[in-house]
Image 1 (cartoon, rainbow, N blue to C red):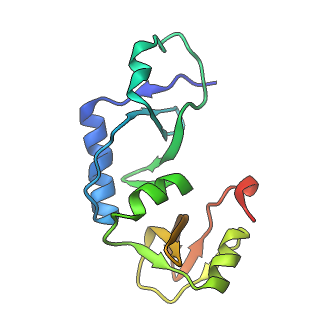
Image 2 (image 1 turned 180 degrees about the horizontal axis):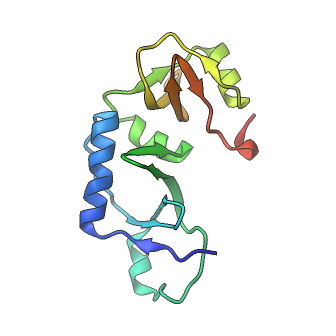
Length: 147
């Protein structure tokens, strides 16, 4: 089990910088941001400040938002829904057939010049975040969340 680390304002600004560079969005956290030892980010209501969490050893708490990877961020399905509606770049629209394959956990070939982590969208809905390399979209949907 891990201890979650509360991100300070400088660290939050760095995350917001990654979001802006990757997805072209101006986002502001309305919640406290915590990170575990595996660089996974969690959003928690600001009321958490009233609890002394230093003695708690937990793996996760709150809403799983995404994961920091070097100078990129891979958003969770919920994170992609939050960021997707304001993202101005790196959004890949899939047709219904490709979206169905994606939700079944398949990697798919795409005809796109995008690369790196992208938001996956179908018919106005955000389905998560994947990584494009050599025109192949790698799937990061967890097994338990696949259709």
